[in-house]
Image (cartoon, rainbow, N blue to C red; front, side, top):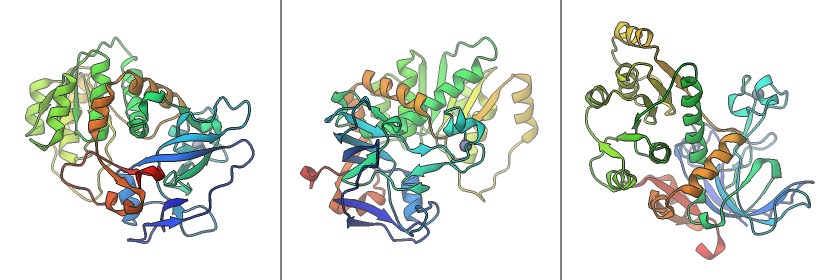
Length: 353
Ligand SMILES: [Zn+2]
């Protein structure tokens, strides 16, 4: 089988290699890889900024945004041959910490969790992979073309759940949401907002390309330009922040409606400084009972939520988010973003070669 591999810590080490098919361990399923989504984390690993190989070797199979079809499943696993499945990215730390012991490995306290294709375990960027049935989620069979969007949807399902849980500390009935950033995370956050019947606004830097039309097609409003102006004009009840851009983050924090909630999902580069009026931001947060919360990764509950989001969504809209499909033989091309990329996908199915 072909697999996309990397030597973490070594720039330019991504390659497509021929590897033996994996042997499922006791209780595991064998899955035929169909597609692998490419995200900023994969590009950071390829750029040697991030990533840890499994113990005892210097390389790993890359990829965490999976989609596959079950080839064999142990009896009693709840899966059968032919099921469309996605593998969960994170595994609890071996100790485990109290959060991991409660199934909330996305909230791991000691940082010793592992992640497929990112930290300590092989990823899903292969034409065959194994997975424990407890860390796989079945998708609606109609999602074969778009199910690779599942993992970013889990991240967004968690972000929305965080907003709900923070909101539940007092009376909470949000009406208007602003999503900053119209990449995959932002668009999927907007989709969930629309599915909830909210008034959804999306802010991004670009004025053309596929993003504005995708947002409008959802029935949401698209904005470009100065984030402070957009946020203060809208005064949103909830902001799902997906740019990681420092200025946008601070503009969101200081421009929400009273009892506003900002969920930060974008990871910023370090070392970029900007001048903010910390006093004004503090006053706004205190005097309006605002909350700012960070959110990353997802646990099994969020995978179930995300499977429902995708099943309810317009498949052709989701398909338009996948702006490039690169055959596995050319997988390296997927690591170089192109101007109108939203989501680039590596097609693993041999029939796509
Ligand atoms: Zn833990």
